[in-house]
Length: 235
Image 1: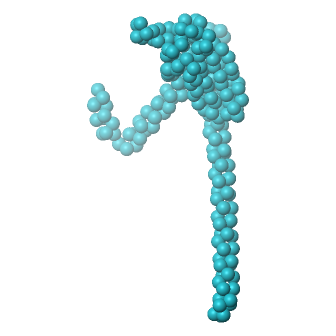
Image 2: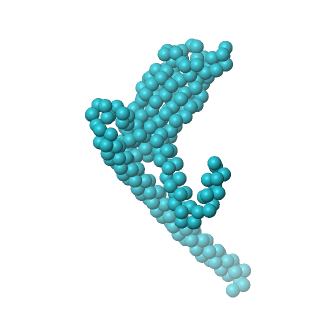
Image 3: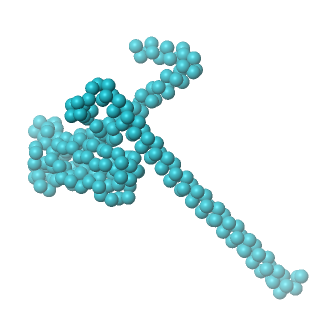
């Protein structure tokens, strides 16, 4: 099937092929924007941090669960309730907006108030859990940003929305999220422009300073040579 699809794509005209490529890229971006799910391993004193670019006034929900390595079975098993995770979130200005102790499986929520890169850090309370000493912990983490963090099934049941009303609400929230993303991109572009202008200005002044230094050295060399020739009575 994959080979047949490849043959059909090659046979398309350039405009249709480009349109299909654009649609495929948009679909990939849409799936990527749904959230980021991953798992990682940490030791008892290790701390893992992740950077998430978030627009302002955007809700973020993180779900996690932990698994402790069982040396006898040589596999990861669900961690006991005694093992907890400490979650800390900092905004782009390095201000702590969330710092809380959770259990071995939990959910944390925060709302961004400053656009930019937010740091999400997790580490275990291994000092309070002796069975984890020297072991390895696997953490499954799923981060949902913006309207993707909403549970629309719960919203529909709570507000008694029909399927059409729920779909309209989803579209409205998606448009709002797109506007936030656009505003964030404009903000990044403005910062980049300011940085570029500042760098160009510094380069300009440095070039002017170099020119003045070269002129000053040239004048000094000419006066020095003149005085040397006059002392030798060559002129």
